Length: 373
Ligand code: FAD
Image: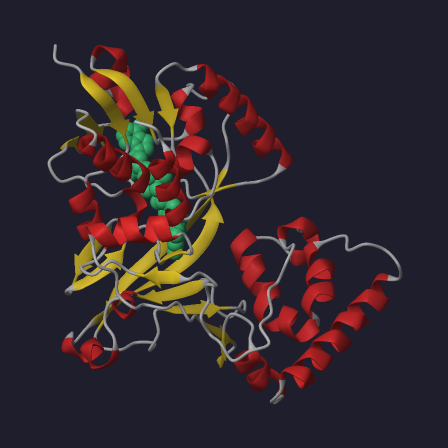
């Protein structure tokens, strides 16, 4: 049999970028994907002429010039800049915390006035601790930003995310809460950001152009499980524990579920991302997908819109594994699995699932660009 140089499990950004580079290096690849479509979590579904981010809103951002040039050589990126809004019981604020937020919150106009307000409230929290260190997330956050910011933007939002009271969450979850003393609503500090023109599917299409791909094939229940018969090397981007048959135990995940619907209006919330920071709404965010790719008057060219409510929840079998959980048990278990992975010859464990590590898109691409082929 004419073997493949690489059998690639998973067609997300790791698998697709790897296949692209391998093809350029004249290597023969086969990509297999268990979902009914290619692209992993960046896949978008077209609804009412809008690219809907089916597995969660994805905004590309990086300060790495090599990564930015790599993706822009493949597809042009638009000018989308992430400027989320927070809705706290009907009051709207700009995020991340910056002078616009502080002006709306306290009526302050200058950075000095804002800083004084924050310092005053931080000092209250430190006094309340009576010389002790913060014992839970609430105490930690109060010391970092004071009561007003904590109560309106952090407390109930975090409780929705984790399904637990902030007093029951460990302080280390929040190490830093960046505060900007300038009028700047751009969420990311990175040099470059945007969304691929024509959507993420276009990016994946070009990456996988001319490469043999099979969808609806699960590695573990297919003939490819005996991969050495088909390929010299394996690139595995599925779940790390699943590769080893969960022999050491299961790794835990957090997940998000989406309630996506069409709204019969061209402009539902005027922004791509609105965070709901109180318990008034059960969801954490509403995403209005058209704003990622339509700007100004373009928004009205499309008479309807598609919105997704996001609900944070505990992972159960059958759900999508999204975020690794960085607690002691999972860190130790992942470490044991990584030791097993190191012993596998001719296997690259890549991506978010294969490394049990949360990575944004740009670091995933950076990792692939650094692999020697
Ligand atoms: P994936 O995209 O998950 O691809 C892995 C693929 O492997 C999947 O298609 C899966 O079906 C397939 N697979 C798994 N097991 C098997 C098997 N046994 N057989 C066959 N196929 C298999 N990053 C940003 O930079 N900006 C953002 O705004 C952002 N938002 C995010 C929002 C959410 C909700 C999540 C979860 C992540 C977000 N990310 C974001 C991170 C981004 O999704 C990842 O960096 C990227 O998807 C990683 O690509 P990957 O190839 O490792 O994983």
